[in-house]
Image (cartoon, rainbow, N blue to C red; front, side, top):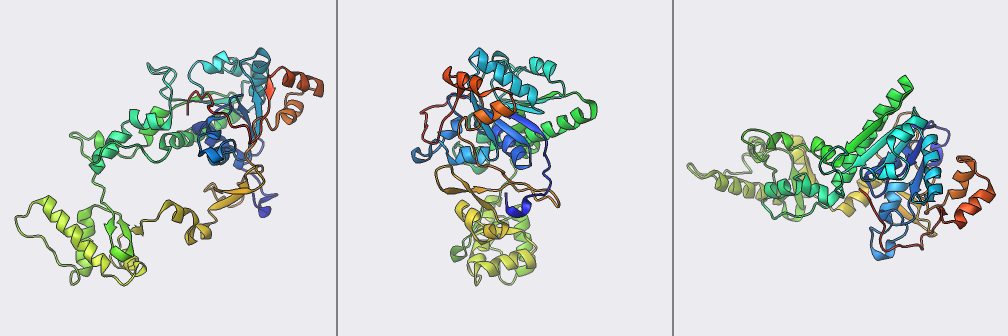
Length: 410
């Protein structure tokens, strides 16, 4: 958080969150809450959050993905398999206004963090439960990770069919982050109800439902007969790079012909098959684009003369670090906990009055055990030392790089 943000109000100031989730869907929602002012305590298992090791070998422990999803949180490491650990976890759940969990259905109950028990002791508390397929479904016990959810929800098949290519994995964790956003919407609504009525509730988010409920192409697939919305390919503008133009190819062609008919001749002939006509017109557009004096001149003519929204095809690295990203202040340098800093994309929220930003770096495993045990749980030093000796409270460092972290869901 920048120096000018200190003293400004934070949207979730005063909200207490227990984040029992790991990997991405739950933890990213926890980061949003933390950066908007909530006191988020991440309860991490002894095996460690899997994102600590979902990384290149040289980045394991405090990986970039772990840092990105866990900025701003405090961290306690408790072995919930032990009775004493379950008691501590339950007391933290009773402290919280919001509990985030993404265990497989039934696991939270076995660990003493089930909704019925928590609600009875903490009636105002809100619990957000993320699972792959829903706790009341026939697939309730199936694990869920973004790559498998992309397959199960049809995204891989549809993307391949639309592109006329073999099935390939998506290049991001779309299912996780879409679910995280829905989790945030659900918990905000439930918090509002709790404020109004004094009674909290459990919000369940199934990743399967979240992905398909957010996927824009479902309306085309559900049309009878279904149709695949054509996606115009980017144009090869030669030295001017590749250019994406929004709109169906026939609309792009008609607008370019309307404004630049003297520069773009129609290569189509009467009676020509539509695919051949489309191919020739696409090539004619590319030749015209290649002939423009510069990329900037081409973009200006498309956007301002033909009123066609367009953009050059940038690399991800260019988008993250280029001049426009610098203008937007897109990247933050955060403490990497290894003696240096690492860049992280900041959250996109810009409030007119409130501040957003991480008040602390991503935490080590168990970094705040003593602090939380003293101030939240009310334990004394002697009891804390006993729990550490018994292996109920654990701590780690960036050098702790487990080969595999047990995970329940994304």
